[in-house]
Each structure stands twice: as structure tokens, then as C-alpha cells.
Image (cartoon, rainbow, N blue to C red):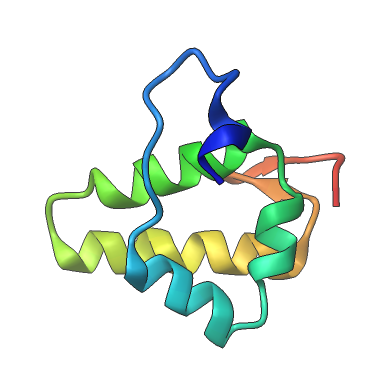
Amino acid sequence: MTGKFSSLKRDTYPMPDFVAEALENEGLFEKYERRPPYQQNDYIGWITRAKREETRQKRLRQMLDELKQGGVYMNMKYNGE
């Protein structure tokens, strides 16, 4: 997965185990991987930068909901999947 982010000009974030587990448990890993690298990286950075666990979990839930719904990225319309 690291090579996929090589063209990004911003900091890249490794996927934490709890995010990978949530994606697997929800059956959303494929949908996540079909998103552009910048979106994948933005989601991970946004989730992991939260200081409180409650906020991390809320952000994780938003990402999972957006992946399930499709057509949404960070509460904005997304014309991809």
C-alpha cells in the first residue's frame, strides 16, 4: 500500500489496526481501496489525529458510513463510487 501513496505531496499515514479491522468487519475494505489514494490517506490522517478516543470512533464511523453509502467523501458529494 505504501507505493500507492508515493505520488502524494502531503504527509502519509499508515493504517492503524483498528481501522483495518473495522473495514474488514463491515465488509468495506474493497470500497476503501477503490477510493483515490488522497482520500484513503485523508481519512486515516483525520481519524488518527483525533486526541480523544471518542472522536476517533466518531470519525471512523463517519468514514464507514460514507463508504457504505457511496457518493460521499468527508460530508461532500463525491462522483466516484
